Structure formats: C-alpha cells, structure tokens
Image: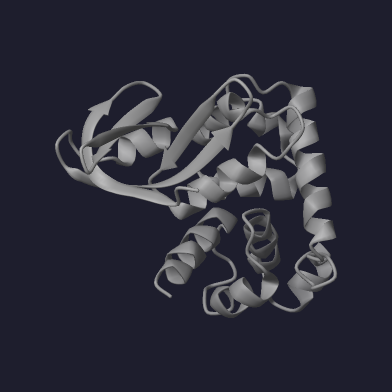
Length: 201
C-alpha cells in the first residue's frame, strides 16, 4: 500500500494530478479541493494516497490532507458510494463540513454534490451513524442530549465531537482539545481548530 507520495507536480487536470517520484509519474485521482491546494506545476508536493484494486482496474487517489483522505475512505465504505461520488462530495465540501452534515443528519445539503440524490444522501448518513455506534461512540458520551450539553456549559462541543467521530477520531482524542476552546464557537470552526491542534501532535 502506498501511504503517500512526495515529489514534483508535473501535471494537473480537472480531476487528477501527476506527481513524479524517482523518474516515475504517478497519476492520482483527486478532489477539486485538493487540486486548489496544490502548488504550481514544477513545485514539490506531498499527497496522501489510497490505492483501490478492482478486477478491471487499479486506481490511485491522492489528497493534500490526511483528513480528506480519511473522509474519502469512510465515504466510499458506504454501499452505493463509489470513488466518483466520494470525490464529488469532497469537491463540494471540506471534511469538516461533510462530518457536520452526517452528524446532524443533513441529507439535503449533501445532495448539492454531483451524483448524490436524496436516497443516497440518507443512506450515507444512516450507514455512517451506524458505524459510529458500532465503534462505541454513543457509549463514550460523545452524543449528548442538547439540554444536557447546555446545562453543562458545553455549547457546541458535543456536536463537534460527534462530527469528528465521523472522521475516525475517538472521544478520548478530541475532548481534551475541544475543552480548551470557546464552546460557543460554530461547530465547523471547532472542528477546524481541533484538527489543526491534533495535526501538531
């Protein structure tokens, strides 16, 4: 498994980029978000990668952030969500925005991504919420009733923690970080700040 590529960006198209490493050019399908984050042609770039092996093809996917590739892998684990739809969602939304949509059950917003109808959006939310439950997220106290959260003065922290759980972070990982922020900040901002902090560790 190729975890990441670090080399020279030699080509960039609408939905893929080519990174040259040791004289070999690796074509990586990617999202519009990652394409926008990439440097100019000829510059050094690092992409986090995922290789999909099928009977008829082997495809390499590359993203500029670890959060985005983890979100891609989680999305494509859902029945009916292929790589094309996964890239479409991440081209429309950041990993943080995607997590908020799933955690809050906002299927309508997810349908803004190309190829995502209402039924598929609802399936994404259903399957990923089930996944969180299987991981014991609910039992660890991430999902708190709104009244309880308010009474404890936790503001948007429980919602941010639940969204981060969609991205694969445990309550033990994120709660110590989240508790250091203003609980009244928007959920998306709390997620962004937490990911930045976790990235420094």
